[in-house]
Length: 133
Image: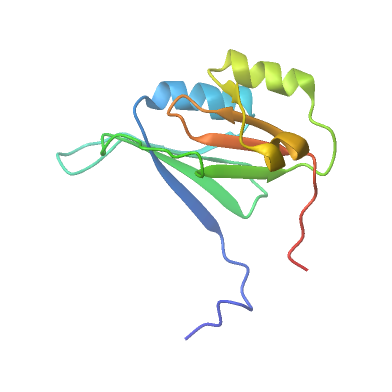
């Protein structure tokens, strides 16, 4: 069996979406993620699917339409540690693309900016850096 700790696994974050086009506008048009894969349902047990990310990242976001409706909570956060100031132009683009600025509590309000995507999931852009080492 492979040792998971010695590998550099790729992380997939999968979420349902009510509106794939609106989600794409937010994540691609606003955050500038790339479309890595797109699939259209061809049969009764298939779903429209969109995979988004940056080509050199070790993660991607998978959005799936035609599944049970999203039910995000305040704790469903996708945090991007930017290790520096947040560009106001980026925040304006995210809002133009369908995002809404929200409070994510005292910690995140101090260390970043939170927005909801069109499905209500929270994206936090943090001014802090992060390392697992």
